[in-house]
Image 1 (spheres, one colour):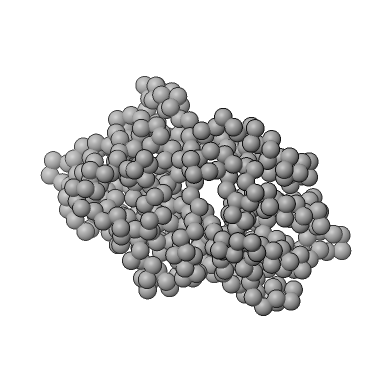
Image 2 (spheres, one colour):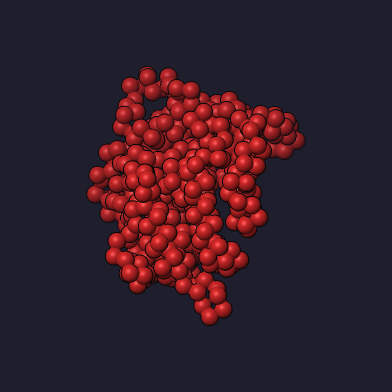
Length: 426
C-alpha cells in the first residue's frame, strides 16, 4: 500500500458516512463488568489462534479489562476505522506499517505512558525499539522480531565437494555453480544460487555485499556499489545457466512455496534465504532434507558483513482514536512482555524482541531458534527507512530488477535509470 495516505485517509473517512464499519470497533464498558478493549490483529488460521490464546491468558490474569480480539487482514478497513470513532483500541501490525500510519498522525505516542510507569525499554533489543521509534518518540512496542539467514542442504553441499557452508559471497557463488544440476533438456533440477525467494535476492544478497537501497536519511541509493556488485554476480549466474531456465524454476518454486512440494523441502535447492519459521514447516511436512543454518555470507573484501539481514518486528500500538487508551496500554504492555510475547513467538515461529527470552529454554527448544538468535546478537539487522514513498520505491526497484534479470539492461544501466526515476521520492 502506498505510503502517502493523507489524501486516502481523508477519502476513506468520508466514505464512513455511506459505508458502516464492520464489527470490532470500540465498545462501552459494561456497567458491572470489566472495560472492554478491542484488539485487531492481521493474522489468520493457526496464527490467529495463537493470538486468541494470548488474549485468553491476559483476560484470566486480571479483572479490570476484557480484551476482545478480531482478525482483520484488509488494510483499507483498518485505515478507515483508524480515521473514525470506530477505531479499535489496539492494533497489531508490522513496524513498517506503524511508521506509515504515524506519518499520517494515526498513532498514539507512548512516551507519556512509558514515563508514567517507568517502563523499561532496555529490556528489549535496541534494534526492536529503534524499529518502532520515530523522531525520538516510541509509537509501538515490539512483540517479536524476525530476520532472514541462510539454510543449506548438507548432502547437496557435500556432493559438490564441500564440507562447510560459505562465509563469503564469492565462496557461495563457487559452491552454487558446482551444485547446480540440469536435466537432459537443460532444465534446472537443483538451484545452487539463492535466487528464490525473490525478496531475499533483493534484500539479503544485497546486504551481504554491504549494499543498501537507501541512505541514513531514507533517500534512494540504487547505484550503491554493493547493489551493483550483487546484481553483477546474479547476472553472471543467469548467463551461465540461462535466464529462462531460472525463471521457469522460480515460477514453479513460487507455486509450491511453503507446501509439501517446496523446492528446499524436497531437496532441489542448495541455499535458501528464509526465516526462523522454516524448520517447523519442514517438520510439519515430513521433509527428510539434511539441512544446516548459517549466517548470510559477507564478502572477501568485507568479511565483517557476515550475518547482515533485514530486521523487522511485529508491533502493537494504540490508534489515536482509541476510546480506552489506559486499558489499551495495560494490554500492550502485557502482550509485549515476557508471558504474552513468549506465547506469540513459540506459537507463530518468530524471534524474541525481549532480551531475556534469548536464553529462555522453551524458546531455544524451537528448531532453528538458537542459530537465529545468535544472528540477532550480531546486531547487523537492516531496517526499512522512515520514507513516505517506500512502497512506490520498492515497486520501482522490482521493475528495474526485472529488466536486469531479463538481460535487457546491465546493472549499471538499470540502476542509473532507477536513480533518475526515484530522485524525487521522499
